[in-house]
Length: 289
Image 1 (cartoon, rainbow, N blue to C red):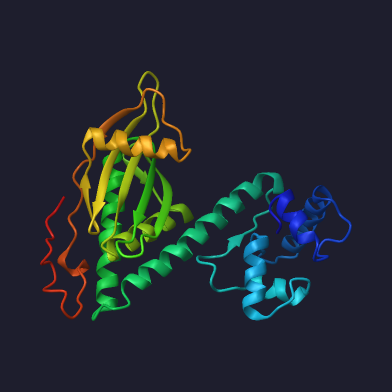
Image 2: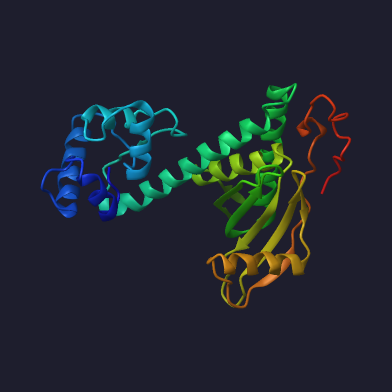
């Protein structure tokens, strides 16, 4: 689907939609989706993003105006994750969710590439990958549990130590009556991005934003990543990270209270690289944070 009027206008030059306006296209598409679902078919949706679609067509020698190109793009295995299933929602409600899902899939694909690149020269790539993913799962659950009751936002920015590539991700975690509610595509993107930072011995920062309750200011706790390990930030470091986010356009929450991050599981020795000349695993230090 073309998810907004701008994408629709860009793709219209390939004659995909005929003379229809974007509004008419949405009405027609919604009718088609409901008819297909009414026949008992499971319908999968994907955002038809102009730039990505054009790059795909160029890579595989397809004409963007050809129906076969759209079929191939829809089935592209490079798009990470399980399919987005249409469940009969109105498109006005569905499209923002579909777009967020699409963006999370892109982050997953980029982070997966960075994660695999970090393991390319490793003598034991599969055991190390297993160790990194297990460690990240522990970190994510520890963050969710330590956040406490209510809804919280995790934001992550990592940098590769060699190429300096920046990866970002964000995920919401909620707890109610002691029960954790975690998961979703954004959580998957967050975990894969964190795994890429850990595997690459990367740098960066992780912030935990707690949604304020009545009478309390927003609370932010932070951790610094260095050599693929997380350590709690100091209060000034948390404010510095928030100020950098504000410069980037994220905005500084009014009256925000900053706290150091709490203790997280230490990085296991099995997460360390095993390359010729890299030294023994854990030589650089595997102490808990």
